[in-house]
Length: 499
Image (cartoon, rainbow, N blue to C red; front, side, top):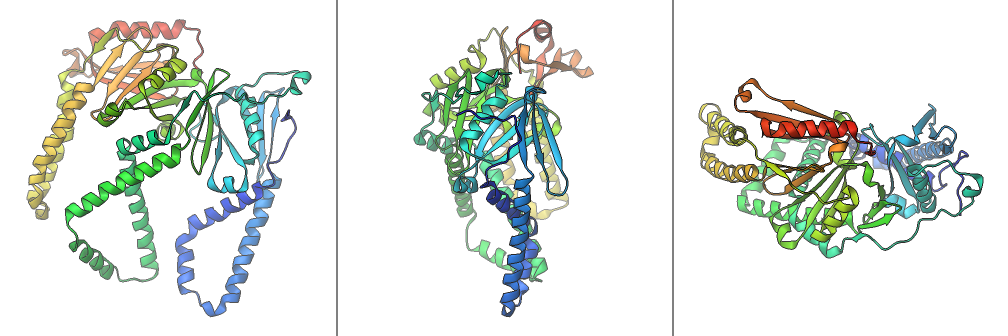
């Protein structure tokens, strides 16, 4: 079936329900503390007025959702080679996207969208730190055809428009099993789970404090109850509980996010689908990948597992902070699958012609900022300001020993591996990561040498790419200088497309 996107068209009628839920959700998220206060102090003898108020609010939200649906249109302007979206209830907005600027088109499906039976189409452009545009409710077939047209736009004739442009069903290039996801969940990404728990606790505490203040709860009584509860349990119990919670959250998050992960080869690109509740569908073009990275820790090495990550174009400092959201990850593959993906993306496997080790000053700096300064500050505060910290001084020795081991392996693994086709930066102490750059995709090179490094022939180098910056510190400048000249020459003379 052919689709004509040249005329303005609406989203699916089911999208009214999606817009209704989105509006209601935003109201609850922004006003949940006042709403909780109202419910707490409401006179339930006036239930009729409460019901009327809820009905009026839902009716207003329904009208807004209908107007959002009615005023939202999108179409493809083939003459100007633009994709145009018009929307707005009170203020009318027109979004125009040049087709050659489109970096990525993702087809996603949240839990609510799955219940309604629609998909969202999210459009990202190079140079934007967020979604350029989003179509919240279209049928799956329309979403797939629209994605293909936006990513591979060519001027076509009227006879070609009538041809069926359905995607060919092919055997998955890569399929990650449930067992592999379990292995990944118990062997990696502990840092993300810890950050998630801390963020949740912080948000919960902030919301609880607001409610307690609003309801005039005695804060000292609450604090006393919490302290009394902690006295019943030992520190080791809470440590074991925390580790178990981290492991369970990491396992569940990995399975839910990457369930049924498949990578299919389509028209010299990789179509990737994954997700249990929120289904994701994206198309990865090898030429758009700027940085390729893979990592492996001790447990993953025993299980023959690698985590892969492909970074595409982004810009601005805000984009770099939010870059991980647009990274395309492969959460667990064996060595053969890793090599196959690298060949697909890079056309070749990286070889090493020269290895540059960091100067010993790198180790000195990490020890200074990772061990000496934190330990000195902690002990100084305990001696002169907070005497309550003194019983914890023995833990400083444990911290020093632990950090010494971490920094030793970090220094041991920190390497710059070079060849005429690839730049590989190896780093980290536990999750040992290799970041791969191709010289012709480099946009610029910055070298920094402090005056006290000049005599030692030490330099810091930063590679600037469309996906962000990659740096290597404390390198030997004499060894690196010929390579820098070669890379700059390669950037100037290459005619290969990197976008």
